[in-house]
Structures are given as C-alpha cells and as structure tokens.
Amino acid sequence: MNTATPCHDTLRLAEQLISKPSVTPNDAGCLDLIADALKPLGFECEFMDSGPDTFRVRNLWAKRAGSTRQTLAFAGHTDVVPTGPLTQWDSDPFTPTHRDGKLFGRGASDMKTSLAAMVVAVQEFLAHNPEPKLGIAFLLTSDEEGPALDGTVVVCKALQARGEAPQFCIVGEPTSVLRTGDMIKNGRRGTMSGKLTVKGVQGHIAYPHMADNPIHRLAPALAELVAIRWDEGNAFFPPTSWQVSNLHAGTGASNVIPGDCTVDFNFRFCTESAPESLQQRLTAVLDKHDLQYELTWTIGGLPFLTTPGSLVAAVQQAIADETGLTTELSTTGGTSDGRFIAQICPQVIEFGPPNATIHKVNEHVALSDIAPLKGVYRRTLEQLNAGLSA
Image (cartoon, rainbow, N blue to C red; front, side):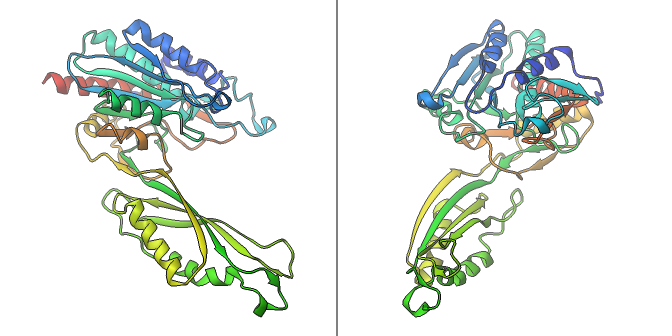
C-alpha cells in the first residue's frame, strides 16, 4: 500500500493549475500549460476552440500514437465553478494553500489535481515505456461546468467524423468518497428536463365559476405522476426518478385565480428507459386529465454504462495495487462529460479524488490522496499496455 505524500511534480502542477482563475468558460491558460508539458513527450496537440466570442470555449485534443490502434484517453475539464463570497474562504481560492495536511483552492478536487496527476502519470509511464503499444490521448475542455455545448461534445463529434475515437477513457471526476480509490463510476444516469405550462382562466377568487384554476386542474395529474414507478432499475442503476424542481403560478395577489401554472421537472433515468418512452408516458397522463398545456423538453444527456471488462479490470487492479482498497463500482451522482464520450468510446469510467468539498467554499484535497491518484493512473496505463503485449 502506498501511503507516501504527493510527489513534487504532481503537487507543483496542481498548484499551477489552481492558481489560474479559470471560471467557465475562461481557460486562463490551463490548457497551454498542459500542452506544454505533453509536447516534449511526443503528443500532437490540437486546439478545437468553439462557441461565440462572448462565450469562447477552449478544447484540447492531444494524442500520442502507440504501436497498436488501441488508445486510452484521459478526459477532464480545466474550468471551475464561481467561488462564491470571497469573505467566506479562509484563503484566496486561486492561491493554492496548504493547511492541516490539505491543498486548498478552487478546483483542488474538481478537477485540477486529477489533471496534474494524469500528466505526471503519463510522464512516468513513458519514462519506463518509451515505445508503448498503447496510444495515449487527452481530451480536455473549459466548458464542463457550464452549458457544455461547445466543449467535449464538439471534440467527440470531430473525432467520430474522422475515425479517431479512443477505445478506453478515464474521466478525472472526483468519484471517491473517503479515500482515493474507494469508488469509481462505471456509468451515469441520463438527465431530461421538462417545462410544463398548464392553461387556465384568470379571475377573481370570489367568483371561481367565472375562472378556471390551472393549479386545481394540475393537482390530480401531478399526484398521479408522483406515484408512477417508471422502471425497476437494474444491477447497475437505481430506478428512474421523476422530481418537480419548481412550481410557479399566480400574480402575487391573494385574491386572483392564476391564468396559468408552470412546472419545472426532471427525469434522472437509467438504461432501462428511453427518453421517448418517458415523454410518451408523461404526456399520456396529462391528456388523460384533459389538461390544456404546453410542454418543452431538454435532454441533458443519455445514460451510459461500462460493464466490467478490460478497462474496469485494469483500474480495479491498479487501485488494489496502489492503495490496497477494493473499489466500489457506482453509477450515482450527477452528469459528467462521460455522457458525450460514451457515444464514441466503448469503455468509459470516471475516477478521481474524494468529492466531499466540490463546489463548496474552502474546496480542498488531502495531500495524502494526491500520490495514490497519480499512481493509479500510471498503473492503469501499465495494466492496459501489458494486456496488449500479452
């Protein structure tokens, strides 16, 4: 078991990345820093910037060919969420700070330490394997925490069009819980949102017969939707869930029946349900209750699942060798760019440090988690490369 403190190179690069205020979509020079570290290793670095001038996104596809057609891509994002009130931070969020055995700064956990560990892991791997059979790539963006319209999805479409998609991918999302290596994500649920506006007739609350209350009309349908069991899930996913996030109606006055009612809702769905079937089942309930309505849908991402195979096995073994832990496979949590990569890459997993402080004030990563993170990435490269050599 490796209990060493983080190696100097990984920590130094993580600190350099944290010091750059790369709030979405501003890359703030992070990708240039990473490209400069990869070029001497034989990587061809291609920037695929996208989006309007008011929201310009930087994307990097860096690839080093191996002697086979098999490629492992390390994927991630350089952008971070806003800091929130600076007065609530114990140190400047873009000044990497050591305190109580932890590295503090925005992006320390999500996910600049992962990016640094990936780069150094590749450096160490190539130092001992200068001509590997395994190709290695980096797919990085500055638009993961934002709309995600001009980031990873743009690169994936380009790679698919020219037949350059990787066979394996590790996304550096912070997936661990208590210690680096105790959990990896081998899939994620899909997300689909809807905005439903139920029509009524506005009127005076003392004359209900002259109005038509859309809230009252919606209530029975809403109760039925809440009670639906959309599917039973499977061995890897919990059942699909449906949740109302916002409900708006009324003018603010207590004596006015509203003319319409708007409901925002979201499906988090597993591989047992398709977006089309969920849409059809929901609208059937609305029609059954004879509602007059408008409904718009937004599919934020499809579910993906990597069943245990060569990539999962390599990461599991790397974690066991590096940390002594038996990792847990999980599909819980929100969405990630893995949903785009899984459309072109058959084996995608997510693995990174503990996620307890992501998006929070005083975000941090334990110094003791950094070396194992880098070690697992390096050992995974070794495992996959050895498999190609067997």
